[in-house]
Image (cartoon, rainbow, N blue to C red):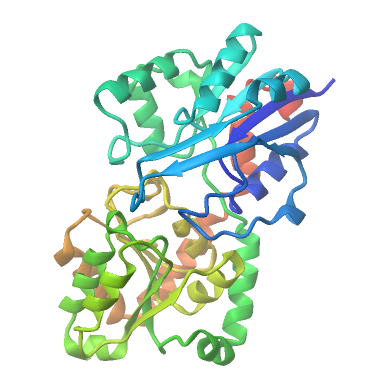
Length: 387
């Protein structure tokens, strides 16, 4: 008899589809995913790859409000039909992707009413600025106390959940993952067609790469300042490419115009498959975030064979970036140390190549299948089912 798992997720994010597909493939698991919305157009321009979905799912009716100019807060998402959806599916377990929406609290109440297993999927870390404090932190602790188990993506979030008094045996690691094989294949194709790709995307011969939302919290101004600290000779040889959109883009471009020599490129937002081309031809991914629970762009870049420069506040850093092996970790907001790391790569292309190869090897372990195994354990799936 199949073990029925209801997985609750905010939107149909492209990077989650391979993970949910892998979970649905596990023997004797009957997975049903309940999305609170198809996407969030106020934050990202992702395509919704419905043709790739191989699991049962539904999208609840929703209403979203976001404060004007808000990038990371001031958002409200309300839904109809959570209880009805659970009544119809009758899960043996609920795996909830957070606590920050009213529908998630409805699901917790439903689980307690029907005496079923309730697991929370928590990605917060103690160094993530979005981690709640004060009254909000008390509310989160209450939510956590009423969960039966937890899924976390890595060591930083594991330690955060432990700090809330949760016994380690209740916490299961489900390593955050992307479709490594897909990105690696697309990157190889881009390198084999390098001249055309470079021309089509208007990319300089050599460049540092940033991908993500262009907002202050991602450290983009620190990255620009670090690039400006490189010698004129290095800037004339190596450009800087910002892939993405966001509230800070206009100001960032204005400041970039004052840097000379140097090549600054702002291609705009890129969909999943096109991202691989930017990764493939870059020398290093720079992830200068000031606050981030994980940073899946690091997974993507590593799958494409790139070394990484990341800040110590990124949730993924502890698990993915091995200093001196596949990149460097620098303190968040430290422009001087960021510039030194960038200079190291700019002066040694062989170092970039060696560390990129290490990245590709390290990321193979972070597969959708491994993430799915952790989610199954957190969901309370009996061992006879999950194996």
